[in-house]
Figure: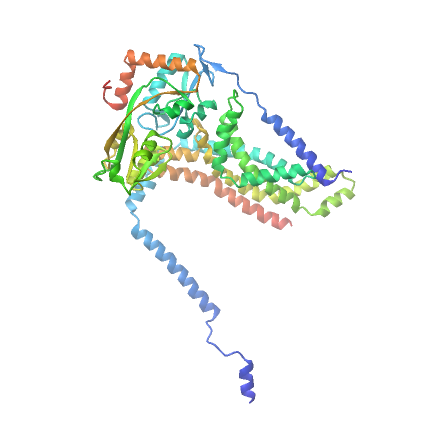
Length: 266
Length: 276
């Protein structure tokens, strides 16, 4: 005669088995583009990015637009597929986890090429020159990191600017924000005394907002690259070929002009 | 002499404030505190800024219809997926907790303590990146990942609720059913579980409210615009419009779901009380 407990065990076992079976869904087979480059989803080039990063990628009226978006659109066009953008935390983009997990084919997120990231993912050829800059309330007079001794400096998690601040702004109190939007709002509302980030996004923001200004640039000689999963050479070659094409046929200059209002100097 | 004696035995007469008077004073103090707080806020706050930041009608209008057709729909569907998975897993765990097999009990206890003791945010990060890494080659649908992460968190709480519900059914019910010749499992399925279900309905409704709020963590798993839920939708719009109004709009949408659910939970509780 079964005891109440053994009944519970049998029921539990049955349910657990059913659950285990239902959890074993079949994965999709590897998709490819027309040119034979492996993609995580058939017919689409899935891009990981982290919003907002104006003017590289940001949301405007129900769609994601920006410099990087246009560049990757050109790559997708060469592959004969459509771009689909996935917004994901920047930390997991630059650590390579999103690419390894098959969340996306490539990462285009205004991402600076550096050695640490090279270990986690493969970078394309550089497609944009960048450097670090300081943004502060207008008239604050903070023109160097030394001016911020004893004050608070906002940084964005996982960025090269954050790293630069940790090394060079040892006297300031560093406050970490998850994304650029929150970081810039904090400068405007006085939660932090200043913030550090890539120069182009800060200039873009300062142009639209009179209450803040870019007060300093730090020559770091950085360049942005597009990330692909380590050893995904087929896609990397395709990306580099597309970047070379748009540099040559003037598409790159058109895109640059659209988002920065000037032509690239180099 | 006799008067003195009575004075000794009686407590010295003190002037006591009557209870009614005391109640009046306490109420007056409470009102005064409230008035002071309202006054301080009204004087100190920068109302023009607050209106601009939180109540910008144009910005609010711009959030529609997508806040409803995309964000609200996603929040509800993530919540329901997570709850469905959490309910199944929670039932398994609850039965494991009541099992006569030791390792089952220990495993279930371990699971429940583990997931109840962790911030949901960490669970989402771990599942969101861990599961696809652990099962390479399978492109896992985002909805599945959200369902897993939300369900795993919810299951721990649901399991405890269900266990309490099953244990709340009086022993006599099983004994009576058995004496009528029912088998143990038949008694469980047709006598105990239906009664337990009625007991656990209110706390389960509260669990749905909790999962609704936790679904905002889905942003950690990456999302296309079509997959944005309310919290992320609000945050994105906050950047786009440089105004907190979208956050308020998104917040109102949460309340559209959670307030009626809370009301429902209270109603169910009253009904359960009456049925006793």
